[in-house]
Image (cartoon, rainbow, N blue to C red; front, side, top):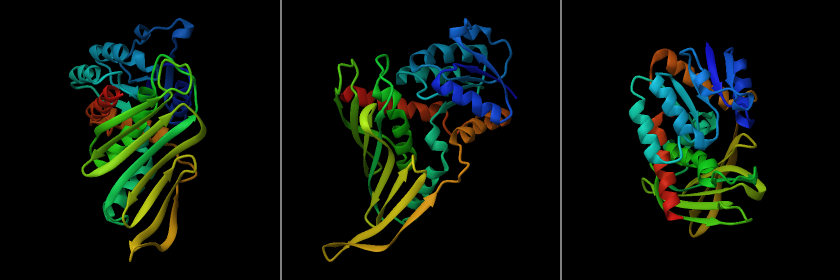
Length: 290
């Protein structure tokens, strides 16, 4: 299938490589080379891998022209913009790149939660920190937190932001670190994100009263710690169990293939604009709390 790719920066180049691995013919629109989104001249699917502040205008243009569109996360900068995109999306396939929802390891964690193996789920903690790219035109909420909101929503089925706090670790106009707390269907959760932190973390921890599961994306593992309180003492009830991701795991390839499958079958994607709207509303709530 021919595909249009708008954007060829850090992430766009990864998308291009993956598309070619999947056997797609890719036509790149790169404004640095004098290209414009208006240069798209066939009705093949379009992938937007551009900065978040360009998503709304670009997606609106494409949807008005009748294109099927994949938008890198987040879908737009505000929930009202996502609502407008949703209104334009009738009869079109629109998918948002919440990549972790397409990672098989999240299903491993979800199965542990749903099966009762961890007991009653009490708490979910998602941490995403690193010495990342210095940014001023976007925020940690829009750049990093959409990943974690999508993970928490997938695992717990809801998102209710209760508080948020930001920290300046430089003279940046944006907070360099943000902590967000909330609850979903009786489960407390916390999200901790920073692009200026010396320790790289890509972990999701789910704590139940019979054990805890830790999804470490860098290690590509889910490790379960089985323990419980007996007679006022915390005891280990069985050895830790580690699940390793397949060596050839490529969540981006899984995600993009899902988009093309939806285009061909005309079915709604797993991470469509309805799902993106939940994330956008949580981001708005966290922004208001800040």
